Image (cartoon, rainbow, N blue to C red):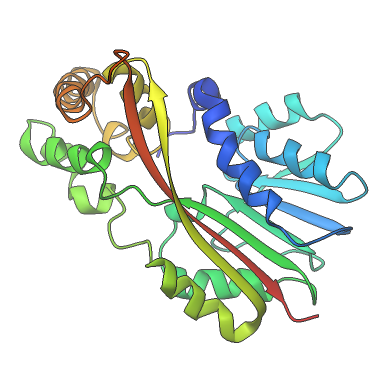
Length: 260
């Protein structure tokens, strides 16, 4: 895919940071020495970790040069580096691996999460938050519009672009981590974000889930796709009593602590 757009991503920063803060609040650590923000994006989640653990060495990792540049500009006193969560291995074991809204992009979670968990120090914590919205209208309509227009060949299989089959059931995350852990906390929350209109919902997903559908398209195809998709979103998310739209956004949270 093309590189991420930090400005578009941070347009809804308050909404995106809320689950990051709620995940961090459930991390049962007092004084970690090394905390890794895996998939740090523009540094909004890294800032939370640094504020919660001021004595820790905090390192942000991401695959996106643009996101890393934005994170360094935000937090010049912290260390950031390019790394892929699928293959990353630390030079020394961290006490916290914090992965907010990144692992949903990767396959084979039954192998990936135990691998990351195994990288921790004894007593360390793996904290993960992932959007779980592939069955929501916002994402079902991406796949439907992708399959139905003149852009279909350029996009390819909508299931692949839409990352179907990557997420496990919440209980399955418990099962893959519990045999290796001192404690595992798994929960699922559905946020309902107040959005101005259908265009705002499209702008939200354009920074994340819609990218694999838009990146292969030329400008004319992209404009046509967005017009068709926005019309579907307008129907799927009708105005509420105040004229705003509510974007339902389920997320899965996992906090697992390694035996000390």
